[in-house]
Image (cartoon, rainbow, N blue to C red):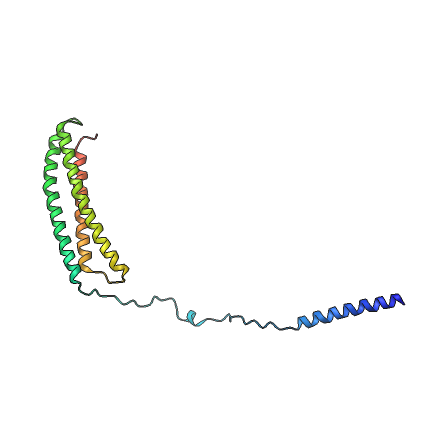
Length: 174
């Protein structure tokens, strides 16, 4: 008898476990999943949208600053050209002289003066670029006059660097 009761008890437990599993299998997942179809944004394509070109409005204050910068650049270019002629003459004098001689030292001193002019023009280029960067940070359009003076100042700076390198190369190395 005990064996039959034990068997029935075990059968009843197994049967109830199977019923519970069957009921769990019939449950429904209520979570909504996205469709695998094309989304509306994927139907638009990958072409770049049209960008409207911003037009710079006249800025009298910036125009005045650009005139001031242009005047400074002209003064720097004039001073450099004048001192470069002197430095070239001193370098010609120092060509046959020994390193450390008076002629060589005079030419090196003149080159140092040219480096000062170039540093001033380089600072001017940096100032111009900072103004352009400030305008871009404010999402303002490129200002053509500012771009033009920047190109002019950079060309002058490059010219000065080339002249200094040429004069330096003509002197005996230290």
